[in-house]
Image 1: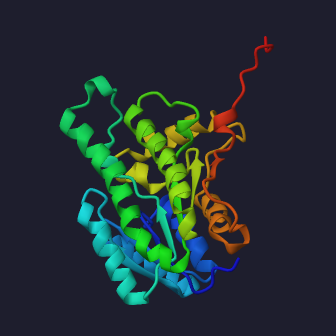
Image 2: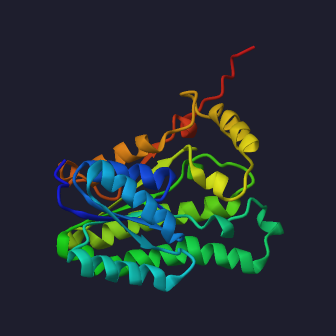
Length: 262
């Protein structure tokens, strides 16, 4: 899909959706940079992808640290002399507790906004100069909760809604530089992230079973499926697409209510 030899940074790619996207891009000949706040995890995943596809390296990225993204971009550019793709996938889960807004401490509220919105905008803005050189692409990973609310996570929903507006705004602003900006909104996808924030395995299993009921296709998603769509979004074969936000959620956003069922 015309991606051979390009360089992609995928944030939060040591597991879950990020890893699914990184593996797909590597399989298409992209030099993928795996990132995680835990450098040892990023190194391990990069080695596994390299063994399979021969095209991955790693770097440390902490979404909570505004300077971390700048350092990452600088390091990658010095190593490869180009950056073609930025995938904004990382989420700072510790700053997004499942609490009602009225029960949220101001400092935690500010930390959530800073990490998951301000620092994502800052990273993307810093990437502009590199992407302009290569007429590259940004792919943002949003969430289907912007279409159909999931109660109990209002801050997460608000921030993902802001990300959608960022996608539209930057697509319009950067079209003159031939930088494409698009977004995928997944439903619930199998991910280590839930386990990494301390949810016990038996609770996680119950969550998956419960959430599957809200996806008309009868199951939660697989990271590889999001990766497959990401490969299409970033391909030169669809180079006329920008500002697009596509739901891949097993029907979560359009689940109907049968008013005629007895």
